[in-house]
Amino acid sequence: MRAVVQRVSRAQVAAHGEFTGQIGLGLLVLLGVGRDDTEADAIYLSEKVAGLRVFEDAEGKMNLSVHDVGGSVLAVSQFTLYGDVRRGKRPSFDAAAPPEKARQLYEFFVEQIRAAGLHCETGRFQEMMQVELVNEGPVTILLDSTKAF
Image (cartoon, rainbow, N blue to C red; front, side):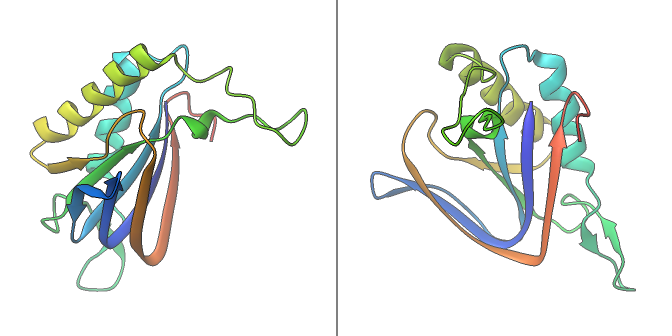
């Protein structure tokens, strides 16, 4: 499972012109589910996201989590995180999970974020979406449950 995590002052996602999720201060999480991922991968990433210390403390050091600052999470599914362009210019998505499995693990990830006491908004799974954000810093962190990076 892979995630692109961005520290935001605000973010929103819309599908077919209708806003499906909006947050103020918090984390935008673009989440990709791989073919071999399990609930253990979702738990690992949800714990990383919830505890990620990327917000500044009183001394200006990135030392606080989204929970510490009273922030929220916007989780948006993005299978293209598994796009492989090593053999050409058109991405192959063979490593991405099939839609049924990806939906189940994406929803499980969201449940885990909420169980951690965080407010979590979402996009719409398997729909074309428009994501808008104001990345603060900018701060962008890449996470992979297999620790590939």
